[in-house]
Each structure stands twice: as structure tokens, then as C-alpha cells.
Image (cartoon, rainbow over all chains, first blue to last red; front, side):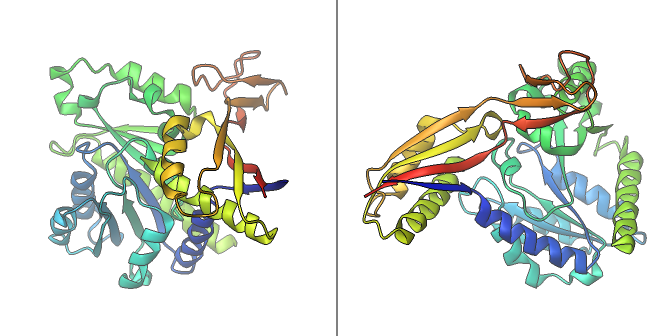
Length: 223
Length: 113
């Protein structure tokens, strides 16, 4: 006997993501799901962001890492609340894992919550966790063709940060190609070129954060 | 390896739907997977075989119907298939398009006994 099911496979995840989202709304958090391949600079970006936002906006981080607490250790030096989710062999964070971290955070004392996903260009793009925006980092050492190889992540992201631009002269990374490839997949994607080690472009990134935080507050006051 | 998590979800939804019908066995599951989901059918069926072991869906055939990426142009109202992830209207060149296919990941129906 054949029966119609017509159910989204990830509906269990999406339901929990919606619960997370309601909690974030209540606490007036702008929530970003930060994705990239391993070593592209997610934790470095957050270190610099914590430094630059200090005294302006309160940052909080939920970080997914396979086996260690190294990322959370790096971030705790900046006096920001950082919760480490040790994901074991999981290749991405899902809504349920993020939900498990939230009771350990004082969300009402956070303006911007960044969920630092597991380093991987495929799986994290599949699972919403309750975020306002997905954002991603592509580093120049990875190659300018990556948007074409991993289209979902580039398609889902509101912002692409191109990191390590201070190293571009040592690579065959073509900035124009990278931008064109990303825009082909996602015409509306914002692109900011940065170097976490040299500090290039970070003011523009902070301005992006401030703008989207204000936008979120504006939406909340109209809701 | 997001296939393993997806396989687990497919199993849970199918078993629940079959139980509701009072079935004792799931024989076949028809899945719709959009191209943008990046599902590797061979990997997914392999993972499904593992998670379904010793459940009522043990040995069930998982069919993965792949759906190409499709778009609708909000500027000229034409519908088209998106080739090579080129998200612009092939007719008028507008980037003002919405996706109408390619992101779905849904269990269409199942066969039970």
C-alpha cells in the first residue's frame, strides 16, 4: 500500500530552529550563522570583532568544534560569553545542538550572537539554527572557484567575507573571478575583503554588523 | 557527511507515518531532493541502510528523485531551468528571480505492508 507523506525531511530541525528564533526575538539578539571551510579564519575574525565591538555592542559566541575547546579558549580571553559545543564527529551544528547551549548564556545581555559553525563548506548550509543571516568566509588560499563547487553555501549567505587578502600575491586567487562566481550564484550577496592579521576591511565588516543590528531593532519595534 | 543525519530523519518520518497506518513494514520510500541540497544518492541510500537496520524499514528501498534548479523571473514572468548555477533570467537578463525548484528535501510517499 502506498501512502502520501509529503513531509520535509528536516522539519524536526526547522521546528527547533523556530523555537530558538523566538527566544532570540524576545532577547533582541541579532543572530548570525558563521560558516567557512576549516582554517579560513572564523575564530580570528571573532577575536578581531570582539576587540572592535568592545564598548559598542555586546557580542556572544556559540562555537562548534569537533573535539577540542581551543576556539572557546581563544575567545574567552576577550571577556565575551563563549559556549563551546563539542560536536564529536558531527560535521555541522543543527538547531538542537544550538538550543542546548542557550540555557548557558545570558541572552538578554547580548546584542549580537554569532554561531560559529563547524569548518565545512557543505553540511552547515543545510541546517538552519534560528539565525537572522548566514554569513561566510572564503579565504584566498582556498581558490576563487569555490562558489561554483559549493553553491548552496554561497547561495544561502547574505555576506561573504574574503579573508587573508594580504596573502593574495602569493596565490593564483583572482579577486574579480571570486566576486563574479559568488554573484552568479547569489546576485544579492554582500562582499567585503578583509585581512584579520593586517586589520584591512574590518571597519567595513563592523559597519555591516552595526547596520544589520540596527535593522533588526527597527524590525522589532515595528513588530 | 550530512547524509547520515538526513537518513536518520527520513527513517523517523517514514516509521512514524507507517505506524499511523498500522503497518508492520516499510518497503519503499520515495524522496524528492533538490539539486542545491547536494545530496549524493549513493551515499544517502548507504547511510539509510545502516540506520534502518533492525527497524520496520530494514531493507526498504530508498528512491531519490533529483530535482534540477528552476527559477521564475519577476521581471518578465518567464520560467526557466537554472544551468550552471547562473542565477539570472536567460530571457531578459534580470537577476530579479526567485527559485521555484532545487531546494526541496521531502518524502513524497512510502509503500508499506
